[in-house]
Length: 132
Image (cartoon, helix red, strand yellow):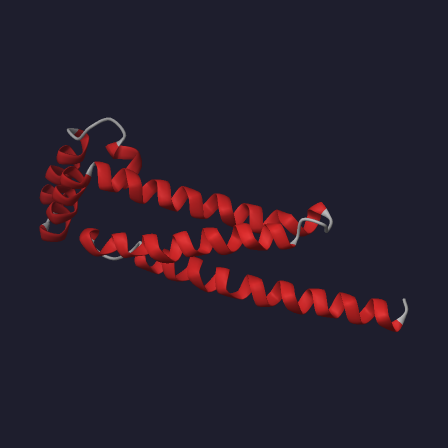
């Protein structure tokens, strides 16, 4: 391998890392924000949308390269999409999910937790999927 080819490969790897690092940080920030209590949880939308935009830009940057290099950005985009869909579902069923989380936070005994589970079972279709 000649020296100019090596320099180009190093420059490409450096640029790819420069574009990948913010995506990783934003996804981690979004995951952390998903563990916040429900009204504050919607803060996760901002870093996740930014991560999706930066991932699409990264995929455009990687377009002329081999397909193997595009796998992880594509997986990242899928994960971010699922997380955003989960937040959208929680926004749609906000009242039911909020009531369930309040019930769980106040439950001190197994019987109280059982009552919360009954509340979850009475929720709308799909509520079980959004909470689990």
